Length: 319
Image 1 (cartoon, rainbow, N blue to C red):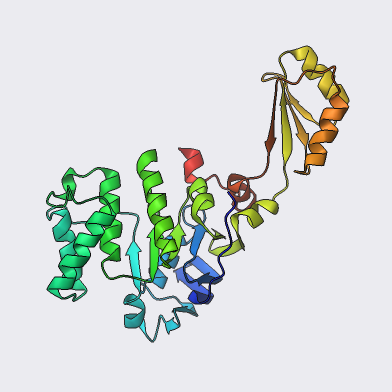
Image 2: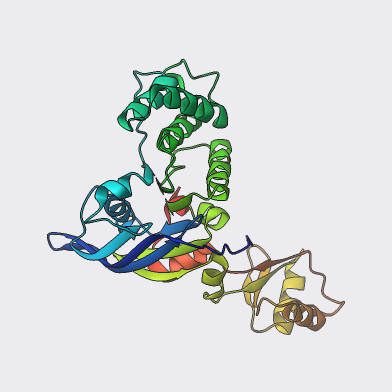
């Protein structure tokens, strides 16, 4: 997916040399990263790579063992209160209270944030409207669908108008429709200037949403860039030619000896440089005498990036 690159004017998050270990197990090892204001920054990695630990450190829940980190210029170690006033966290598991109504959950967060009663009510009403929860506001979340509960979760995160939001696996367990709704919510937040650190194992999600991505493996950042930059780093573009019968496949394989054939599916895969010239060359070499039933172009995607950089299948691929 192509998207315009945002020219962030301020740095929302700055991390240098961050390290965290539990006994002999190093979870984060000399991590550097920077997130711009209004940017959606995706953090990819297999289970145990350190993504959730990174979120917990940056949200001041646990301290790092070494390194420095700041949020909008406020140091995590010396100014944790200032950092907490600027951030919101939506974790992997819902933080809503099933014994309270949706509206009461928002009021509770407002009280914890010391919002005045008038502001608390106004903000809750605004968020219920924004997240299409007005009709369910007087019901308990125990009666909500997974997507509704997740929307309430994010609404609660936004009660304090955070400038930086940590979304840790925000769409885990959601059905495809609810997942798409959540994607639009994330896009709208970024359009409003909110900075977002998105941790996810859903590669399509990262490709759809992230302005930049860092791939974390065994506690280290092994690659960073826009989705398109990461995909350009991985070789493996090829043309997929499908034929109606074995005779056509045989003839094509003789003309395109660099290709690899799949006799079961009557497919020939031919390496490509991703350019239109490569496609024209292949078709010219086949000539008019060999009928191609179907042709597609495969360029490396984030799945290929993930495999190449971590050697580990993603959660989405395992499902």
